[in-house]
Image 1 (cartoon, rainbow, N blue to C red):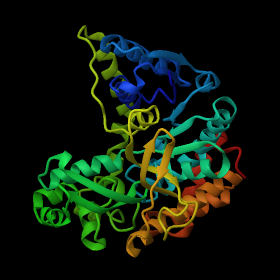
Image 2: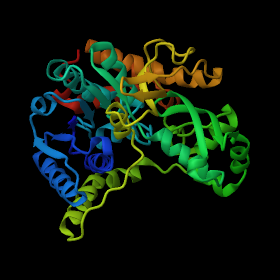
Image 3: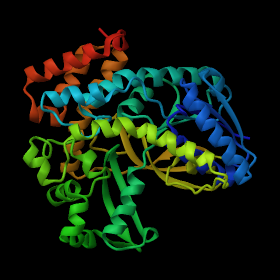
Image 4: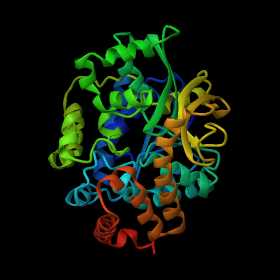
Length: 428
């Protein structure tokens, strides 16, 4: 009976998806699920959903709820992290916006991503140290952003076995099938790079190269309009990238430097999104409350997330292949050793086995290295408690450097730092 600990169960969208995956995975039919969050109200809501789902679907899973992380981790076989630590859109996005820097999501790179790392990664490291004491053989399935910075720091500072998980590769694969008018189950892809900037090095339909069909689809204005940034990147760099138009636009210096250019690529100003994003979590909570209020039984459908595929394979449910975030020890030859890369991984009863991608095309590796420079300094900032390294990370961000002067970056950084107050007291 495997034990699964979900740290950050108050992330209700992911928690609901995970629970539905567990109850539809035969190898996990008797798994014990420990839901942990620091917010009792969120925890009670997802706990009520979990118990109702298990009862309605008819599995043998058991549910534990608690705000004590140690109890959730004790004797766990799998630990899933979906935490958020002090996130504040008014700081991470609002302050840079006043300086003229319009980030789209601000959770992976840029000033928003760096400050998120400063707040979040120390807590993830605490989780890993607890795992070393309470469940040393457990596998960490790490979903928290900023993914690459977090996984790099975990690998550097702890002995915890971990793989970082995202859904961008599998969802982009489905999108590409749609763009070329193919059934989703007829296409396959070989993808490598870093999280949110992994490249479709091969894209095939029924075993044949489908890139010619994708180039043809790009010439259709209706298709192009659905993904203008990624098609523009493919036009100039030769390959399709794993993250969305909205996300990809903030990782490079080409798309968000002026309102005119943003308009050309259909990128709405983030200032219009802040209030909507702030309301989104409450909408998610209300949707679960509505589901629980209805008398009809809850049903479950398997999602495209990797977590249960991994756990099923390790519990004897067969071999699977996923794209995971792991340390780069030969996986991608022309990226720095030890950096966090996203590569195909085979999963079986013995664990996670990263595959070798080899060298990326030089232009793709160069784009990635601009992001890795930021990640490396952010990891240094966290592990050494260095405010200076954090500032340098922001200064090296490709979009930030394209929009702001060094003096403006420093002023913005200082204002963001001050807004965090005691949250960053451990840094000097």
